[in-house]
Length: 102
Image (cartoon, rainbow, N blue to C red; front, side):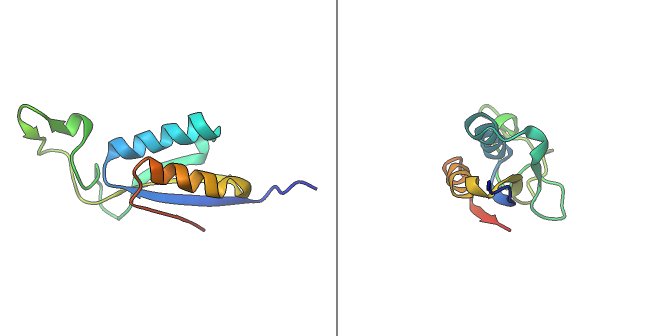
């Protein structure tokens, strides 16, 4: 009998760039469907992360001032329970500050 149980893995990232990289790892390395992956602010405030990255971090002029840096980005994914340890490790390798499951 196959184990069909699922779990939700959550991870927080300092930048949107790191969160996007983590999403790509989940899709490309673990075959998780994009509709099963969610990206949102880790708090109740709109945020692009807690540090500038990517297009928000111009090397010529410094960080953009119009991108809200009000907290961390959360990535969560609904996965097969059997993938939990591997996915947690992958999220940590992608730069997650914290990784947990529920």
